[in-house]
Length: 347
Ligand SMILES: [Zn+2]
Ligand SMILES: [Zn+2]
Image (cartoon, rainbow, N blue to C red; front, side, top):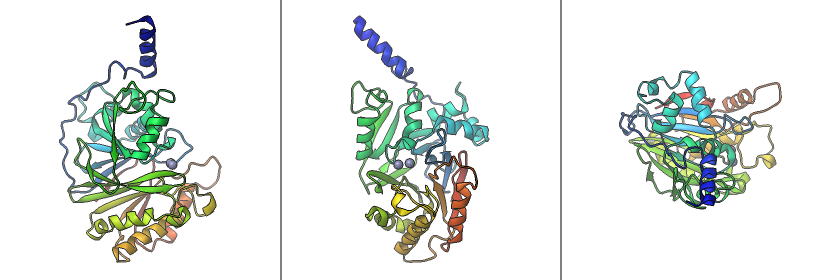
């Protein structure tokens, strides 16, 4: 190795932590076997907000209930969300399995999280992924091609961050393997008992993604950032509701995770590809209409994500959003406001 090359390699290793030369392997610490869900899903919120609070940004861990092979829906915050969950006592059942020298957070990252579904490459959805990459184990990264392109051109490009993936700017550290998703085509999620189907969403100038996750006879729908169809001038939400209506009709859909970034005081012209409680309710009505039955969403858990953190004193925006959702909830859905460390069994 020439002097120049050895300096280059030392630099790479320094930037990439030990990932460049000592990628941690996938040890056999997790003894539970992936099993299709018979009893709904377990949701663990690792990051709840849509900004501006670093350390608490969109990240939802999903696993079939009772099965510890999980997938992340977005990864705005990973390690901090796991630490907070641990401190809240939400990881005790995982910790029992941990016979490794890893901390509870390390065990979750290396042995429980089996891959990432990334809705779009905005920083509040990928910051945790990028920051933890030097100490992450090799995993698949599932996303629409447009998101893969954004990640490989603009994030994992050796300029903004080392290339921890397997495409784009060489050399490839290959911690993450891109799996481009084709809209409306189901794909099994490796090393889990789940499969995913993606639909594009309109999010201002960016294509975002909805992920329908299925396991056995159970389904869960996660929406990345999205604006309302009429404001975005598209039919993407209508297409999505049409596609998932059968899962509602046969009671297989156990939860919807959907954003309400702002409260109802936000004018449509400054939504920037986001939703308010009024638009969430309108969209859920559209879904109910697709099922042909006004009462079809009764009792369905709707987890509200991506509320923008505010720096002003006064009323908590979560409380305002909750009140606005409940005030016009004639669908009988069960609204839950996402909070970091919240663990929810939906069935
Ligand atoms: Zn966002
Ligand atoms: Zn976004």
